[in-house]
Length: 231
Ligand SMILES: [Zn+2]
Image 1 (cartoon, rainbow, N blue to C red):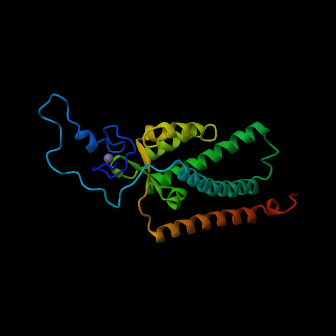
Image 2: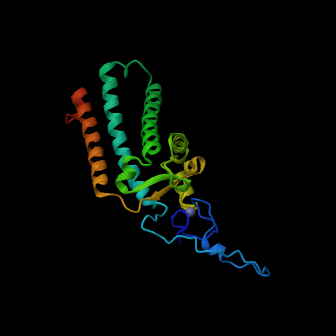
Image 3: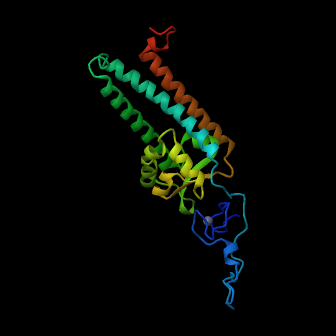
């Protein structure tokens, strides 16, 4: 049923809307046995479901958004690695493998965090989420903001272990399909009812242009990486 307060679809009737926490009409209509004063609403304040109604985003949609974002992040990591190796060509020889793996993993995590944190905090969606048509909100449909977005994406470290198994199963069995980071930050991932076509095309263009620019930059910096067979 659709919540009359915030318009989000609640798949189960647990009495309260999982996003705004307001009581759902069906629970208001339940007469308490033996009480002459039922808690039936006095007036028809509940507004009808409108076209802005939205659902909790499907996990499949979120997975596709994650793949699109990971492609973009990979392109950034590629150009950063090319830039580092151009600036310090001997860095691979002068450190142990363990150090190199640890530092590389740290750089990748920082890039992935900043990517998700800034975009979800400022716009409510990463490029991948915007292309698929889902967004991150706080209670009342607000944009998450940088603080909650930082918490949500710091918990990604936990949710993403291993291969998002934790986040997936927590979301699968939670009301409103929330992963640990959503609970910690008080956020929800909802479907957007209608995404303007122009906006979606603009984001796809930005996503493609960013990946192209990053790969081109890496090719300019380290042309040998793109030779086949590799040298
Ligand atoms: Zn609600």
